[in-house]
Length: 332
Ligand code: HEM
Image (cartoon, rainbow, N blue to C red; front, side, top):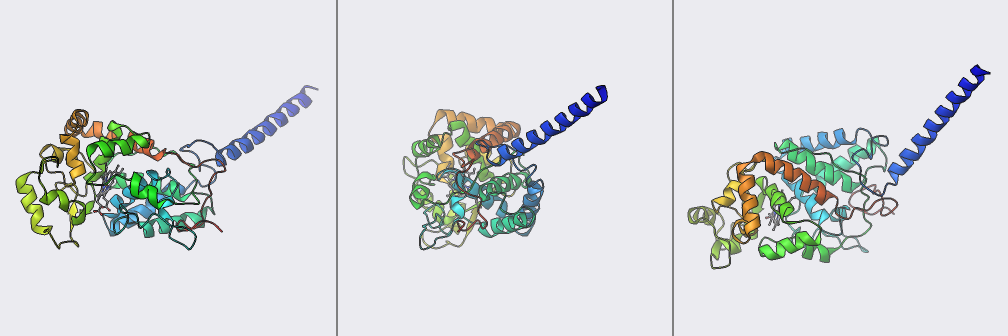
C-alpha cells in the first residue's frame, strides 16, 4: 500500500511539474510584460548570436556600434520599441527611413539583417526585430567600454510605421532644451534620463548639416560654443560644402564609451547645440552634467537604468503585433 502511495505521489509530482513547465513556457511566449529570461527556453543562444554579430560588425567599422544604439533610440521614440524604424517603404506602407532625423543618417540596417538571419537559422520566427535592436544597442555600449545591463525581452514587432511621428517625436539638434525635454517627457522619460541618455554622444559622429546652423550663428539664445573649438570646426565645416565630413560627437575619446562627453560640455565644446543646451539652459541638467563629468560610475549606473526605461516604452506584447521573418517587411 505504502509503495503504491509513493508511486502515486511521484507520478502526481511529475505531472504537476510538466503542467507547470507547459504553462510557464506558454505564458512566456505570450507575456504581457518584458522579461530578461523571455527566450531562455525558446531561443537560449540568442544573446550570444547577437553579441557575436555585433562584435563582427564593430570590428569591421568601429562607428557601427554607435549607429546601432541610435537605431534603438529612434525606434523607441516612435510608437514604442517595436522595430517600426526597420520597415522599408512599400506600395501600402510609408516607412520611417526617410523622416528628417533618419534620412541620410540612420544606419546599421544591414547589420540588423545579418543578426536576424543568424538568429532565424537557430530559432525560426521566435525572436523579434525589436528585441534584436535592444540587445544590439546594449552590446554596442559594452563593446565600446560602457556599462552592461540585463535587457528585458519579449517585445513584438509592429505591422505599421509612422513617418509623421518619426519627424515629430525624435528630438532635433536645433530644438530648444524645453522642446527636447518635452519630447522625452512625452515618452515617460524625465530630465535625468535625458541627460544620462545624451551621454550616448560619447561615441559616434555627426555630419556638418547637424550643427552648421549653430556653428555660424553664435547669437544670444544659441548655447555657447568655445571660440577656438568653433574655429577648428569651421575649417572642416564651411558655410557651404564639407557635407561629406564626419565629426566626432566626443572629440576627446570618440571611440570609447566614457564620461568625457560631459567634460566637453563643461568646457563649452559639445558639438550639437542640443548637447550644449544641457549646460546652459537648465539648472538641474547643469548639475547632472557636473555629477556625470566627475563620476564615470554614476554616469554608467544611470545610463544603464535609463536605457532599460527607454527600452520599455510602449512595447507590443502578448498577441499584439507579430514576430517578423524579415525585419524590413511585415509578414504576409
Ligand atoms: C537629446 C536629444 C538628442 C538629439 C537632439 C540628438 C541628435 C543627434 C544628431 C543630430 C546626431 C548626428 C546625426 C547625423 O549627423 O547624421 C546624433 C548622433 C547620435 N545620437 Fe543622438 N540625439 C539625441 C539623443 C540621443 C539619445 C537619447 C541617444 C541614445 C540613447 C542618442 C544616440 C546617438 C548616437 C549613438 C549617435 C551617433 C550615431 C552614429 O555615429 O551613427 N542620441 N544624435
